[in-house]
Length: 114
Ligand code: DGP
Image 1 (cartoon, rainbow, N blue to C red):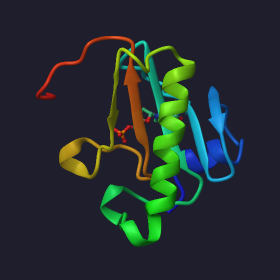
Image 2: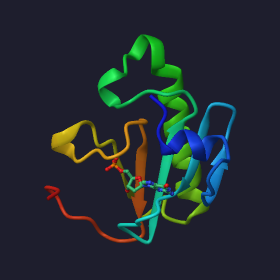
Image 3: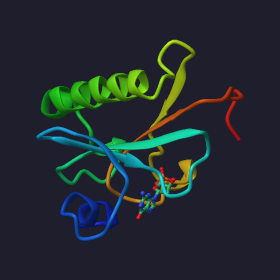
Image 4: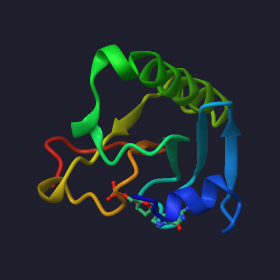
């Protein structure tokens, strides 16, 4: 089902887009939890990480990680490190059911997460 992220992909609503490939789009989170907080999404609609399987989506997932590393370098947080998160389903607090990788950086994070 289409979400607000489909509207961002289709340029129907604005977003601060930082990176784009044929298959992947990355834009700044509207409610940043760190100095760098970017969402990396596939252009195809997949609701959550629970619908991922390696055979079908391996290439796409690999591309999302390539994009994350590329952005981390551009944002100057590659060496110091960063966090990549997929919130998947209700207990993880997923709000938008279009799979997205959070790229968070620019500060130190705690573990375990809240
Ligand atoms: P999650 O809880 O993993 O589903 O996170 C969804 C994130 O998406 C949340 O951090 C806020 C962000 N978000 C929701 N709507 C918009 C939007 O319209 N634009 C942007 N840039 N980010 C959004």
